[in-house]
Length: 347
Ligand SMILES: NC(=O)C1=CN([C@@H]2O[C@H](COP(=O)(O)OP(=O)(O)OC[C@H]3O[C@@H](n4cnc5c(N)ncnc54)[C@H](OP(=O)(O)O)[C@@H]3O)[C@@H](O)[C@H]2O)C=CC1
Ligand SMILES: CC(=O)N[C@@H](CCC(=O)OP(=O)(O)O)C(=O)O
Image (cartoon, rainbow, N blue to C red; front, top):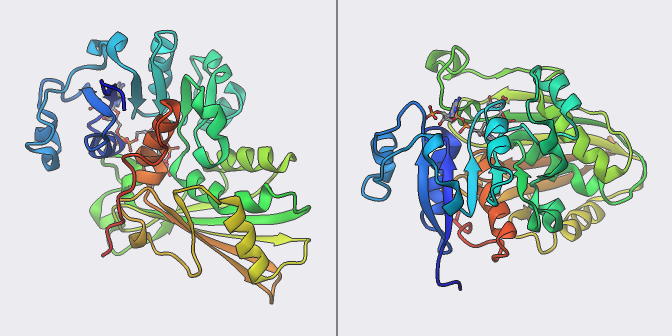
């Protein structure tokens, strides 16, 4: 153990992923939170904003401009798309490791970003340094990265669901369909008509049909694994729960398969990956709630000769803050699981 803890800063902590980062990092034995920022609440105490931190994190929120970046080892950007890139531009050469939770640097190029996010990218140079922060796939690259682009929540569940099938040289894998459902915290802290109680409570609906920005993030990562261009369908749905994602994916394989070989394929692919649990039954979102686990159940449907893969994650943990801390552990050369082994909250 080092004598001194690593110093970390959370930028954008009035939001959901920011407070989730604080919840995980405050109990991490190797780090110390030195600053938490908020533009709209600076001057207030963090625990006044998020009462669950009362007596635990009571220090004052500062503006992002006041962060003393020279004293910080790792900065987490828990900011909206389009805002994060400005902070990456400002701090990328300051010797700090940056973990960006937004989608600003997850894609292969600024052109793809502009096409899917429908906004200009003001720091295209950042793509040269950004590493896609999925530890199960890119641990080596993450260990030396200065800028990690933390994956989106739906892409985390979807890519982990399908990576063994696209990344094991099985030959033709076709007709992939991902049907995913997310709890409301996926939409961020700001209230909107979509997130209004009476529009969500007792309700269930699809959105982003055919054009959600996570489609391209999933396609790109599966294409890299397959070493071939992958086109798939992804449809998100809004669930009337606060946290959790359940993704059910369907696809066809040319290769002969049965349940035992499919299960072995997944177990081999995720051998020594501490946060992916290959299950022998369909997981539920409560079985991963509050934890960094991704639970995956691969099922071979011999009648249709298609694979059905069901994955459950907590969007705020494995889908955001937990994965970000996992990336931090790898970037700092720590044990990858440290601070992240919370048992899920069921019920
Ligand atoms: N929620 C989820 O499940 C997931 C979210 N993500 C991504 O993580 C990022 C954060 O998400 P989430 O916590 O849900 O978002 P929220 O909307 O809950 O919070 C965003 C934060 O950014 C701050 N902020 C907003 N505008 C600015 C600005 N112009 N300058 C500085 N700070 C600003 C906000 O307020 P303020 O500074 O005023 O206090 C707030 O603290 C987003 O990019 C999101 O897409 C990724 C995976 C999952
Ligand atoms: C329920 C809900 O609204 N979810 C968000 C995704 C949240 C997330 O992980 O995505 P990004 O970091 O890419 O924004 C959405 O569909 O836009």
